[in-house]
Amino acid sequence: MPALGQDLHSYANFQQVRTKHIHLDLSVDFSRKILHGHVDLDFDVLADATEVLLDTKSLAVDSVFDRDSNVQLLHTQPHHHTSLGLELRIPLSEKKTKGQMIRLRIHYSTTVASAGIQWFEPEQTSGKKHPFFYTQCEAILSRTLLPCQDTPSVKAPYSIDVTIPAPLVVACSGHARGSPVTLPSGHIKYSYSQPNPIPSYLIAIAGGALKKAAIGPRSSVWAENELIDACVHEFSQDTEKFIQAGEELTGMKYEWGVYDLLVLPGAFPYGGMENPNLTFLSASLLAGDRSLTNVVAHEIAHSWAGNYTTNASWGDFWLNEGFTVYLERAILGKIHNSSQYRDFESLVGYNDLIKTVADFGASHEFTKLCPNLVDVDPDEAFSKIPYEKGSLFLRYLETKVGGLDNMLKWLKSYFFDFRFKSLHVGDMKAHFLNFFSSSVKIDQTVLDGIQWDAFFNSPGMPPFDPLTVYDQTLVHKCVELANKWTEKGGEGCSASDLASFQAKQIMYFEDSLLAKAPLSHELLKKIDSTYGLSSSKNVEIFYRYLMLCLKSKYLEVMPSVEKFLSTYGRGLYVRPLFKALKEVDVSKAKEILHKNQNFYHSIIRHAVESLLKN
Figure 1 (tube, helix red, strand yellow):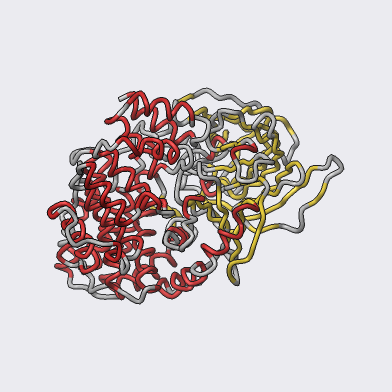
Figure 2: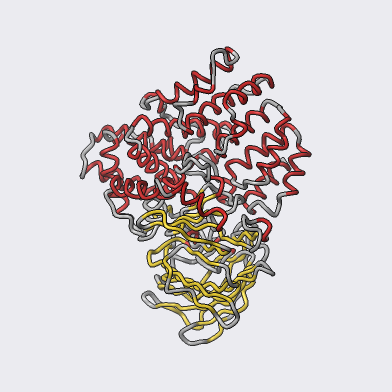
């Protein structure tokens, strides 16, 4: 297990030697579903060191060389942990002292068990002609892609060369270095570099029959040819607006240069992943009406919250996602020129928080903002809690310091002071108190009264009711409509009810119905015949309709549930649907999981397997 005082989820001795630069040289082998090659790691020596300790999991390590002396070094893998994998222990040929450097080359390959890489056969792609792969390393799966110091406490630039069979294309979380090179073998080598220091979980690679099209002055979208036109339509209108709004709100330039999007097959386990220069998005966001582009606003917000300033440990994950959600909603409020809309988005999130706490149980460790993750894989604790409880805490702080304008002044200082650094929650708290004691002076009794511990360390719902400060106008319209159906059987309701609703309001209307489920099958049929929820191209609206039917044991939707679960692998949909399906027909749930076990990302597959076992 890791030494006391270091990251609970890393073997690395990063307090002695810290990664300064990473260079990867990898080849893609679709037939064996592996990446193979080497990684060059440069380390700064921070304290006397006689060895380098790295994280690996499901990797085949062949050899380790000292690049300065070209001497092969012995290596062992003495410690194993189910979640953490194997420690890679590399004794040095001589002791290194503070100020020196260590430069290693490690030859290795991934394996079919490397959970951070997902492979698709041609028939699983849109084009049906070529295979596809992508990496997803958050939280602790970088160690399944390369030997590294797999901790958010360590940030370093990286570069990469990837060789792939022609005519396939590689995209990475960095800037292209030169043009692709066609090799005598017929393969093509693609080169990228990321000059800004990033944590290892943001190293990202994708390869397949990809096309690229411009959607803004500093943005392009990558996707399979069959999806590229839909992607351009979906994301060209809002992406640059979101970036500009983020710059205006933070008072800071977008530091990453290019902001590209890559739309992945439906099995991608998240709505989006904020890989710098190349946000990964789920194809499920292609609603056709741009109603789900708020996910892009979220990922752009990560350019400051998470990628720029990073949580130093996974127990402080809310510093990443809570800040991002807070900034995302400020961006959306600015785009819509409406504080009412910002509050509506926040109320939707508060509703999600209530449901998540109820699902876990109000005393569950994972409902704390700063949970104890000793001997816990961070993916097991993943939920809406760090997103919604974290952003709610920042709204609570906003009420203490005089409103959004003062919070934005602090965020500008916060992002600047911790730019390209990793921090713990104590660093954030100290910075906040110092700023509002000096730069923007808030009454000390107000600062002293902030309930830090109640938010950070108490489980369940926090001691702050946002309904006392949020504008609920848009929510009330949704709830009133839902009440017409549940209390009056839909008397007087018509298709025009939703004409003035934005997509998020329709979702809230469905959530209000879900809160009162089960509903009669006759009522469900009437609701659907009135509003056409079952034919919606918006995956969020359709998902909620399926949940409503399962909660009401309306089994006529079972074919649609099975098709949905075979089309989308996003955990936000898959886990709740399987949970609801388990209550209706556990054998059917297991059958669907078995059919799709190679379709789902390992993170999702393991979560559903655990759910169905219990």
